[in-house]
Image (cartoon, rainbow, N blue to C red; front, side, top):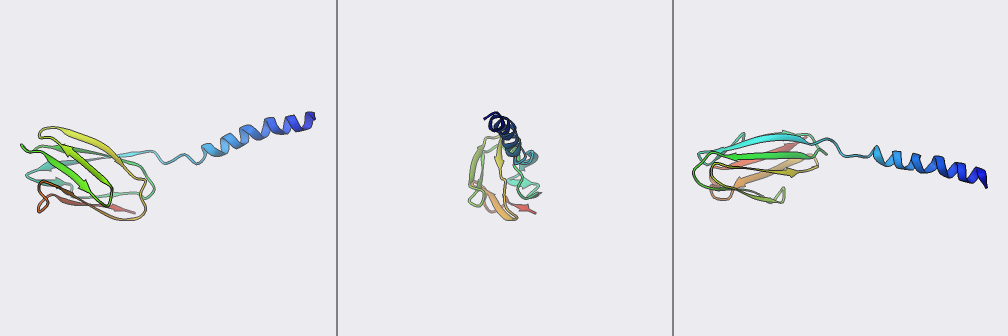
Length: 113
């Protein structure tokens, strides 16, 4: 009986520590600005399987909406303000985004490698 209790005492911390090793990667932060109806930079590259914080600042006098069906995001950024949100972790590939109010000029892509 004592041997079983000792085995259990050593097994539980080992199981707990094993789950800690599967923690997701630390988030990265990327800044994007909106000026004259364009995203800058319009192309960003992030590592696969990493959570990333996007901060978008709108320097225009009109609102813009960051929209991406690929990333499943829709975020309104008012004039002279900024918005932050997370994307990922993502698989390798290309993910398009655009400004809903300026779709002809405000276009971009997230490249995940």
